[in-house]
Length: 290
Picture (cartoon, rainbow, N blue to C red):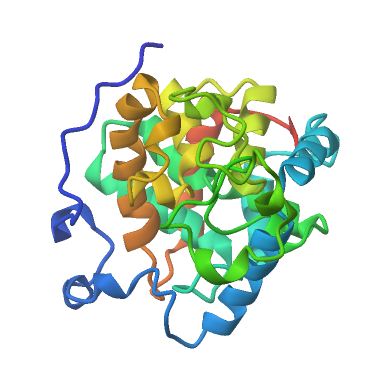
């Protein structure tokens, strides 16, 4: 299957028409999403990032690749993984306090309404957070959820809580890892960068291991959808190559639905399941290795 056409350019502040699951009144308040300075969940969120930014190192990430790279944790279908997320509330998310399974369907339905002809994109909405099953396998949330960032180089300015959470990270005392380029070559490409370990990288690798029949854009979205310092704030340009810049509009288009469809109005999952089961059967059927 050939790659889908690039989406049209979208303004960084998307209009309500691109946020189909938002109530009209909520559009005025969209700046309240990703509020890391106040709110009822802030203490929980800060504690998660403090642990993440202390313990996510080059050595830690490499050990996690080795630990989970054989995909021997569990055998289950995609829908069984979705159901597992009924038991997970993301402790890094300042916007929601309900199970992650609902967010998967909210995101997928937002994409489906805006891009009715791209069924692979709808499925990405459902799949994108399934790597969070790691938290239900006993992994701490700081090694599963939250914004991602490259390890092996100095954190850039837009990383959440950068100025108050990295002090005890040993890599920042390393003579190479503490520099702007760190262990990388200029414009080496994000595919050659070691990202902090979490659900994005795990799910991307799981999809590759199980040979999901999706276009390259789908794999890229899953792998980098939590890399907000790059796709939202434009940091880490020194590591990007032409492929990254070509894929960026897809990640940004996806982000509108990942972020702005979050709502306490929960979807009718039972009514939606048959449609998404059909997409699973088309692109990633059967019992898979996780």
